[in-house]
Length: 558
Image (cartoon, rainbow, N blue to C red; front, side, top):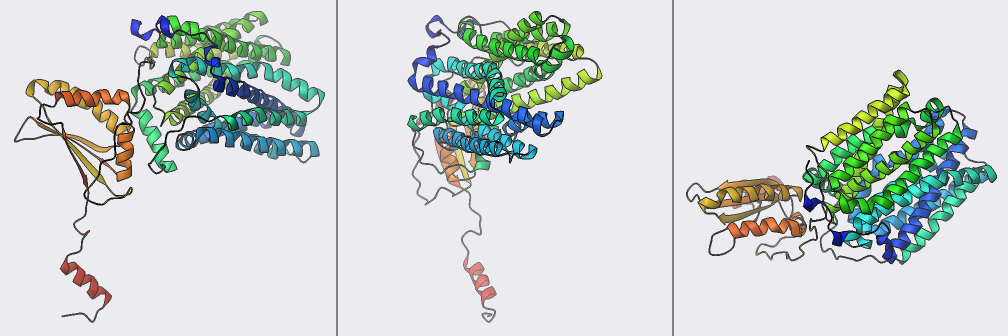
């Protein structure tokens, strides 16, 4: 794909990697979140070590990590819908208070000797549930802390904070466990939540009053899935994220075997490689701003994918610790560069009302693909060899680059997804309430013959927008008696759904509406009719009323 000038950030938009930290709210939350992430890594080290002493089996130790990550797969959609429907600050606050309580109980049980292998897994699973609910709310809230121009840098910094914790956390956790014990690691984790809870309690994000009733959980999830499915930019990101994470799963899953079998090392070598990966991710975050200034979004994804593929291939063939360590550093940089770029596109391709749900679907796709890739390459390594699995995973990463020819990850900074907010709920002569429906809407246009092709092109985009925002049974009709008359028709289940549908129009969507109004050649604007469906039996006739009374009183027979 040829890189266009419009897809490269102009000089006026170029910012340094640390520019988002000049916003005090983001700076405080970022620092506190990094500390909380550090506590989480320390807790994981303590849990894994405690499991070794409680049940010295590899599968039980592996289940510790599974119990933390599984809730992200199970609860992402619910968490995203919750974050979009409720105050995101309160969702994050509730999640961290919950994790604080669980960590305190875990610490008490560990110190008192009441802990068992399955009880430990339960506690780590509950902490994972808190993380699952916090993640979409935190990522969606970044847009409330910094202006849109600083959002890419803020997302990269968020990833950098996690990778700082991942680089330093294992060593700190190991030292705490060795010196004091696993229970102390749980206590440190609990203490690390307190600064973030304090910061969130003080933060007052901007509030946008909502006069509509809150969506049901099922309705909110369906709306999020529908929005993503009808958004080509986000669908392209999901496809590329799946391909990248399946390929990246090779190095992530086989890292212990790289250290042991390919390099002949032990736990120290494994820790060195893991630290190199984390430091590479930090370096990728630092260089992210400068790279965004000179490369297109698609070029960033390709660069990250090629870097990870190179690291995977060289690691498969290397028997030198230094070479493999450098490759893991490069892999970490490619990992952050690719996934943070995709995260930015998802956030900037979804308006605020649905951004947490879009992010949760993206995370489900990425985590699911990573889990599938880890299983796949583990199986290949078992049946063939570790180098063979790493080389095959590198080939998948290169295929991800080629996939960009058909599914490019395009820049979304130029999209104006602010809500229009000028649409007002119309008054009706027929009394209705929020749950009244179904509602049928028709919009009549008069289009000249020479404008039909442009009109149909605009209507194709209008159809996608309508369906994406909740309209059902969208149709475009042409009058057989007067060929200049065209009618757009759609339905919503209730009046509240109709109001919600129109309230979701963004400035980007309004461009299509303005184009259609400009093509309309009538004396006034397009004519809108709003109707409610009614059954013919809704108002009983005198005959049906007499029959009903007869059923109630059998003596009334004439």
